[in-house]
Image (tube, rainbow, N blue to C red):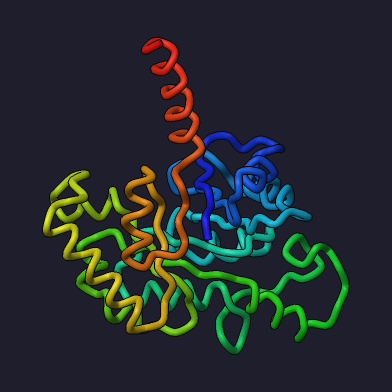
Length: 241
């Protein structure tokens, strides 16, 4: 599936624009943007009636971030900087109701369209629709990769390619053997433990490469990067003409 990282342009039309472009999901970023829960809740609401799944990257692996964006209606949570199995377990507990987790209950709110209904059914639907994605993007995360991937209850391993290169000391060199060896380890761990592989992609070539490696959730850049690259291409084409 293909999607978009939203980091800057949280406008009313953004989800519909993404859908019209062919995206199947949007990740609304709270880690590197100024977006707060009110902005995120509004953007998630704007996805209602569309075939675009609203996902949110929270700032950190903490209960109050994870549970709040799910209560706001997010259908997936992307958690950055996961470095231990204990953190992965915290994410799972924060996103699931008892007995599978420790998430506090609030129903007939945004997450279930403010509708009445039986509690067991609402819990089952919430568990079925919630996609949990953990980012491996540090050397500590790599050290604990197998233990993280083995944690039950989450769905997808994502890479943070820029942070991963930084923490490995190769700073944006995505062809460096140390970086590529880390990618191979993440791919192998995901396959062993039945996790979907995901990544953002800074370019078409990167997306093709990682799709060939087995990545099946790809966010094709950020709203910032896509606007800049498209505008720059038009300007260069005119100046070159």
